[in-house]
Structure formats: structure tokens, C-alpha cells
Image (tube, rainbow, N blue to C red):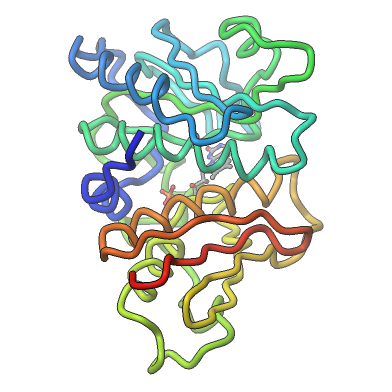
Length: 266
Ligand SMILES: Cc1cc2nc3c(=O)[nH]c(=O)nc-3n(C[C@H](O)[C@H](O)[C@H](O)COP(=O)(O)O)c2cc1C
């Protein structure tokens, strides 16, 4: 499937994690659209997204009591990976974010959940093989009104993205020498979601490429930072495509994650 880059690029800026939903059903057209993306956005066979159209409340658990708990969503998408693949975390991040951006583009709210869900319950609902694991899930539905107090605490208040400036994240080529696609690509990665908003990505920039690394492989709190980086990978590619730059990914050994190199002439 070709990446619908202009819709997804717009969705990157409007997407925010939402945790309270109105319990309403999704429209048939929205369900069909999500099903299509789950089926067709399969750039890596080892990672997949499955739509579950029953109330997912029992799959979520709060951090402390009901703190941070997801409630009232109409549906769920589970992100599953083949654990024999050495790059499965980044692949699941990349594939899962495709589903998240599509949901955003059709007006639905989502929230990556890597920690506070019941993987066994999710696995039994979607059905997984012995070598597979559900690494994360997202509720899908219509968010309720304003951000709740809990949501503000979980995400760091208000509607700004609360992200590190690019200057803190990027090394390499001088900004004055960046090709035209590079700043939008890095900006799209900068505002990507990450577990507890930790923004573990670092970007090393060369004239035709961006290399992503993990800041510090420790302190993961049970969710791999490489999964966050997989999300940032999709954001980089979507923004680059929207600027007319087509490239390809090469996975790298830790602490590096992957390098995006644009085709010559892009
Ligand atoms: C891999 C991953 C796992 C996450 N796990 C949780 C979670 O378990 N519970 C939760 O409430 N939010 C979770 N989040 C959402 C983040 O807290 C949120 O993306 C981050 O604070 C940035 O806010 P934003 O998504 O609104 O831009 C997760 C996000 C990612 C990317």
C-alpha cells in the first residue's frame, strides 16, 4: 500500500492521546476504513494491527487505581509482533502508527497504550501464535469534550505537544545545509508520541539521510524505546514524502535504530 502521506502528515500535527471516550459506536464507514488500513498497511510481515470491534474497557488497567485508565472506547486496535524478529519493536511502532494516523485522519481519537493493559486478554481477543506478543494497543473512538485532569497529568498539560526542541535532538549537518525535506521530517518526528512522553530519539543528520538512535537504552519502564523510535520513523517518512523526497529504511544495531536515506534526485 502507498502511504497516504498528505492525510497522514496533517494527522501528525492534530493527533493527541485521549483517554476518555463517549461509549458511542463507530460509523460503518469509519470501521471499514480502519479495517482496510489494518489489512493493507503491512510494510513488514512480522508486525500487524488488528481491529477489535467490542468494548475494550476490560483490556485496560489504571496505573494506580483508576489513574490513567482508558474508558468508554467503542473499539480497540491491537499491535502484535513476531518476537523472533530482532527489529520487531521498531516495526510494530511503524505499523501501529499507520493505524493511529489513519484513525486521526477520519476524526477518531486514540492513545498508544504499552504499559497499562492486559496483554493476555488482548492476545486472546485477537488470537496470536506462540512466537507473537501483543506489544501495545490503542482505544479508538470519540473522545469526550475537553481533556480531563488525568489526561493533562499523563500528557503534560494543555494542547501544546510539550516536546524537546530540535536543537537538543539533532547532531550532524549544519541546519543551514539541510535539504528542503529535512526540517519537516525532523519536526514530524519531534512531535511523535512516546511512552510517558520520554522522546527517546536522537537524530544524526547527513546530506541525504537521517539516522535515529536511542538516547539511553535503560529506564524503559517495560516499554521498549525502540517502539517509540518506530513511530518516529513513520513520521519522518510521511513528512519527507509530502515534501517530494522518497527514501528507504535500513535497520541498525543498538543503540542506533535505523537510517532513512533518500533516493538521489529527491
Ligand atoms: C509506546 C507508547 C506507549 C504508551 N503507553 C501509555 C500507557 O500505558 N498509558 C497511557 O495513558 N498513555 C500511554 N502512552 C501515551 C503517551 O503518554 C503520550 O503519547 C505522550 O504523553 C505524548 O502525548 P500525546 O500523545 O498527546 O502527544 C503511550 C505512548 C506510546 C508511544
